[in-house]
Amino acid sequence: MIKANKPTLKSWVEVPDDSDFPIQNLPFGIYTINDQHPRVCIAIGEHIADLYVLAEHGFFEDLGIEKEVFENHYLNDFIALGKAKTSGVRNRLSEILDNDLEEWDASELASFFLKLQAEVKMLMPVKVGDYTDFYSSREHATNVGTMFRDPENALLPNWLHLPVGYHGRASSIVVSGTPIQRPVGQQMPAGAEKPIFGPSKLLDFELEMGFVVGRDTDLGQSVSTAEAEDYIFGMVIFNDWSARDIQKWEYVPLGPFLAKNFASTISPWVVTMDALDAFREEGPMQDPEVLPYLKYEGKKNYNINLEVGIQGENMEAAHTVCRSNFKHMYWNMSQQLAHHTVTGCNINVGDICASGTISGPTPDSYGSMLEISWRGTKPVAMPDGSERKFLLDGDTVIMKAYCERDGIRIGFGEASGKILPAKS
Ligand code: CA
Image (cartoon, rainbow, N blue to C red; front, side, top):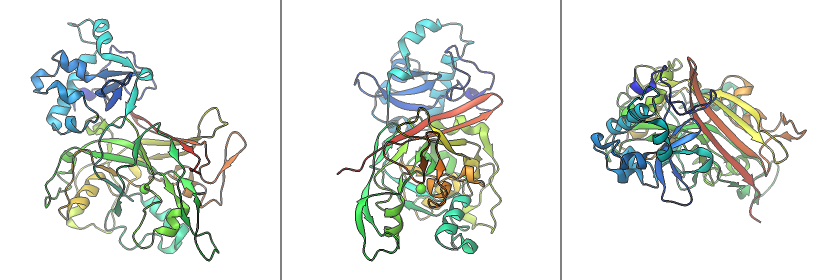
């Protein structure tokens, strides 16, 4: 077992029972306070720990890490140090925050490197050079295929043979809390003879998880399923905002373009694969048998509970519209990365690959309004008396993700965004 994951560890920093950030998690992020230079931090309970301050005091000296890497706009330079060093930093934090710590005075330590999360601003954790979106939930692909094509042949012929994906837009990936402006664009309403132009009326979310690439490859190099985990640093929650009416008209024959490029939202904390190690699960049986380069060994799926809430402008709290789980994915991250690079396509630290909408087998686990409202035919009743087929201006969509076992909860925080009206 990874040392920092030990279930019996407890921190001298108070961690509420329902916190996403016990000492076994220690996810990495970038924060700023009072517009100071952004720095690398980790989350512990309701606090962040400033790694630059710890580095200044020599806590990472024996790991051979210069303090400058922690005064940074992004995690990329830190991640690029490699897993031996980044895991070493996580282990060191685990030692520093462990309540068995005797030789240091906790309260004295706390005052110099801990800050309340409520008092700091979390920024984009990584500089995303390239972003790829997969389509790896069988339930989601089946639902979409059933709605738009043929229930008898819901999956297209390639789907069970390769992890379908497309290259997305990295520049518009934003951190949780960033408002999302409703996009405008061309749409072809049913029965119309020519396209119209205006705000999207069918704005949607897609519940996804994304993995952050932790190691560069050279052009021409491919990463096997067996090597893939060495190239994955950690994971974030990922909302692939989607304008269904724009998508429906534009997507033939090359796939999503403007329906997706206006924004995607991620959570500010990158949860390491080390922290998620205890939550591995067997993936679904893959039948037909996959080609050799997509075969894999071991448990490559992860049991991560997922939730989506919508909070309308007049609502006091979010209303949960979906509960799903990352374990439902048909294609796992190692297969996605092997497929992505099999051509020799190079990847870089900070690249993000998103999973595709994570729908489960039951209607309450569908990961988009398209599926939840079944193309708008089954509106969702909201607690304030309103209903939703798709998202309204003023709605805040809040996605949460957490693993839980033996009383240990490894959470991701949230990825939220409020819909602002289209620009006039
Ligand atoms: Ca998607």
